[in-house]
View (cartoon, rainbow, N blue to C red):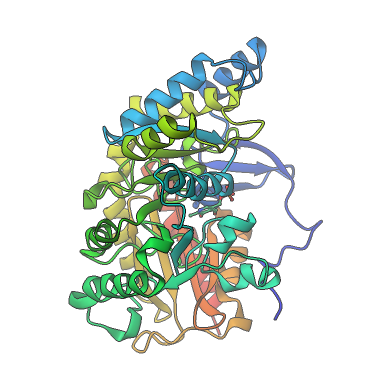
Length: 440
Ligand code: PLP
């Protein structure tokens, strides 16, 4: 089985010159509207002068103060900001340089917590099919993403997978009204089978990203699995690398469900791609036990809390706050989704338009009625994304989330501060690209 790639061979990629707000411009002067924030990362667009000035000023002072020797103002400010945004249950933050590292920290915090609590038997993780948590071995182990796991099978952790929570393609064909209970019962059963005394944590993406093509949780699902975890004393880890930091219109993606995870993970949108920055956040209840018993959370890297990266995070988050961008995402998101659904409705191949805030998935199917996917070798999502790039639009194709290797979705995730005119341009260019690619 070969890996499907977007099809830009090395050497044929456009060469980037600069970024300006919602646009990237290559050295030939071509402009690309960033309709997906790259991989849902660039929360406030590119080339922001205020962020760049904050980074430059920090670099002038000191680029990085090693965390074992020093604290710093940017580190303290981003810590305070994250805890304030997350709400009172949370009390501990450890930093790193991206999503995979942050997921590693989350898994290790769960293990360290149970060790500190005198229950070292709890070592196993449960995760979901059609999920992605990162490319390092631990994070890949909890990822239900066959295509990315395949070359490494045999060396991954022994993780137990339960069904994906997908209202468009419900596990076992269960009715939507029954889906949350069905999936919660499956999790409950799995924990019992493995033995609750063996299970450390259940990890989920509140809104699934690349592995499912933006899959929001079915109604009632998140409170239901939270209750199952509580019943069995299994920690709940929310991986909000893609869907968090405001992408869905709330700072925590789980806020609308009023569900508080024990550990959560953010990265991409936190510093908006200006400098790599990730964070793992634990509740007081979890972190306090670790600190009391073992002194500190044992997860750190040389560049944890990198000073200039923290300064970038502070600057990005302050702009989001000052310009009320989450309010904008919250109020504009449904309209953007509805406009896409309406405009694309004439294509029989558009099966589903779904999402939250500025995190939207457009699933492409061979047959709208049966939801039958396109054959994998047609690589339809990648072809449309390539066509869109030629038309000056960046969108994020994902494939392989149906059956063995089928399924095609385009992810739309514009910068939170994209203008209304840019959002209209996005819809127009996407529509044209789909039309051109589907034309017989
Ligand atoms: N978790 C989720 C939900 C992701 O979408 C990703 C990356 O796409 C990761 C973790 C890994 O993040 P990174 O690529 O920054 O290591």
